Length: 288
Image 1 (cartoon, rainbow, N blue to C red):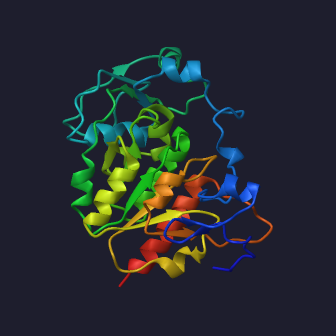
Image 2 (image 1 turned 90 degrees about the vertical axis):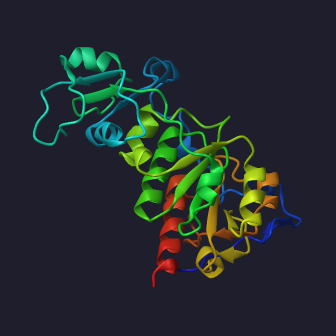
């Protein structure tokens, strides 16, 4: 990948802070290099908060719903609605849906939801414990530090599954419910990729390092490029929030920081795009 002309380093690998400008202090720890304005949930085309609240617990779309139905860890759906009878793709052990008209199905979901004629109501999935994920060092993990946009989180789920990650770890308090737009963006991987919710990201990273994991934080102001920093050790990639990037305390609990090289005239990347690029680089590095 081509190198970029990097602004003077504001964060030293290993979490030691160097003097930096006011702008760099604001951007330090951000995997995109600056505020990700495109990630704002208030831009046009996003469901409103009231619409999301009304649709709480609902998931929609063929791949999303059928992945939940095929997940043995899921209970039976509280409601299962379809615009048409099941076809030959419907597994024999799945519950039969209630056939409804489009207005009734639409009424349960945010306006404009692309449901493909299928929706289900579930309690949020429980996930696993972080200790369980950390006990599997054969695949990399992704830690999300206060990423709040559901579509970004869903897209990161999809990329993590595509590039062979072992799971995601998120902070419980600031992460949206694992349903709705998040589940739709994940395209079924919410039910195939393990995840854990934790109270304290920094303590989780400390526990991971004690168990031999190498923790790499993605930060636009770091000294090294991601491809040069990767090695053979079990790896955790830490992604910061859409606007502020990695928090200072989380940065200090990383072993090293890395940036994604890009053209000098491009200031930022969406956090889910940055995660996909980093996961691809890690997958390529791990190939025999």
